[in-house]
Length: 271
Image: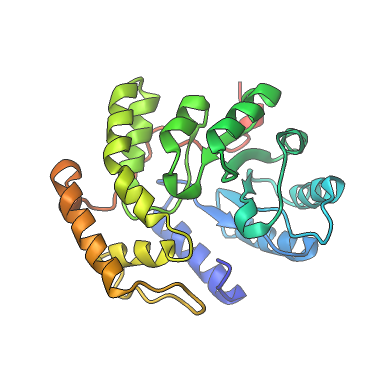
């Protein structure tokens, strides 16, 4: 939501909550460069009935773990719903060590981590070795390492991808013990996952596919934005056509699932 106005942010959250009607969790991005503003966004999202909040640490002129801990603690003190820590140093230029994440896991309401700091499978293991399952870890980064992250102990996948039902199927097969099936499906989809994950044009690719699937009418991005050239469009045609025989891409529809949804309020207090 970095390019949305405050009014648009509120309206989109309201529409999503109303449309979903509890079938899947709605997680609202409420980060900001200032603590007071992040608190305002977070309280607003909770009032709009979002199921959880997610925000990355703010950029700091000089790395300071104590300041980051205080940022998360101050926001957590003002809300009652779960918080997802976003660990994405490429965009936010803040590197969080496994030790710092372990420290953050002690804060009330900080119950999940969206891990996007490669090598992500390795970092999943490092965090698990420090805190066990105290935080539910989601993989991100366009799903590039989803299978390996699940194998290392991630509880799910939280990422943008134009065929989210493929990742749902990978997760469900893995969580139900069908590991070989999950791996096979993931490997089949990897060419598309890899192509969509290209930096600067990943959102443009995703919106183009959404348009082709009839989900949106216009794939235009707000400026400034990476754009697809004619060769990108040809490559996308060839890729979807090639994978259609194995993944049945042309007939896939966006579906919502409530099975084994990982976001659970008050996860740390469950027995």
